[in-house]
Length: 188
Length: 188
DNA sequence: ATTCCTTCTTAAGATAGCTTAAGAAATGAA
DNA sequence: TTCATTTCTTAAGCTATCTTAAGAAGGAAT
Image (cartoon, rainbow over all chains, first blue to last red; front, side, top):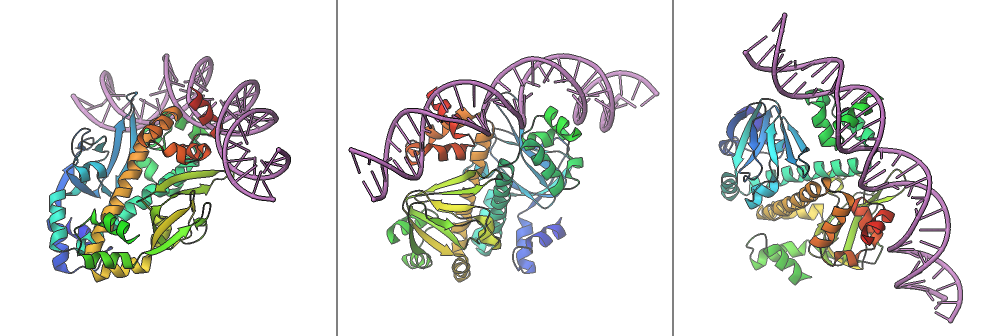
């Protein structure tokens, strides 16, 4: 875990070994089993989770009782419910491990303390949040203009192998396509 | 302009008059006429724009030649094409003034220089980006589960008066509804 | 005032994608 | 291996929303 985190953080700033150790020291190792929840709906999201290994999804239950997936997160990505984490408000979303997943998670208090001890760390997380924003915007711009078929083909093309890692009905949910329709699309 | 910016930035951190002046000094006043573009498709987005007064939209032209609005920004909001701004890549989006608009804009270089001079400023922009992310996520979670009619009613309810400020066909575009359909929805 | 341009409405026909309802095929547990 | 659960497919009918095509209404410019 230490190695992976240090390598990851070094992408964002030139950090001394001491600084890297400070960063790592606020992160807590926490594994989750397949299907275990990192966050339940209605609870406050107390952590930012860095995925060391595995795969999680974030989803909610809509009015008609169906699961809607808003996000997948894999190795070296962060996942949290930002609004709940920042405002300490109840989360509308669940976060759940799809595969057995190892995370390094950090509490808000510890992160804030880290920022106070050295504002340099703000930079790293500013850039991480910026990248999240870019990823979401890209996804939106991208998917809004495409029909169901193109959304699927595009996902498969842009993330080769990913479709094999996730049940098809979850892909369908993420792409906002009914599982039945995705099935017919794939035939063609 | 100075007053407005200082008041705005003070929401995010306790800043001395000197620090506020440093912040304001990197911002350039720039007004735009109705329909004038702040950013053209294909160009690199060189600025973050803070809207002092007025209203802008961000949009792209889809495959079938239709404008799709991705964002409106009003007083005291930021607008930029984050991906283009950060990576200095050509923007897929246009940004255009809907009303005569006054902006305070800042170049990437100047912002970076500011960060170097005092890492404290990173904090402010980390929080601003975080808020943008929350706003986008909220919009997504929100709209994905609703039909056209509820999307419209919701917008009207949550931003009273906004619907009067923007031509109806632009609202339709933002809500991903055809203008004709929005018209029929409103009748009911 | 008159004309032009922009915006909004109405209505009919077209279509993408949903829902429902089985059953088939995988996958995992015992 | 066998049973149970999870996942995927197929097909028919249905619905929300789009497209196309006019015309009406409102604003801005001359």
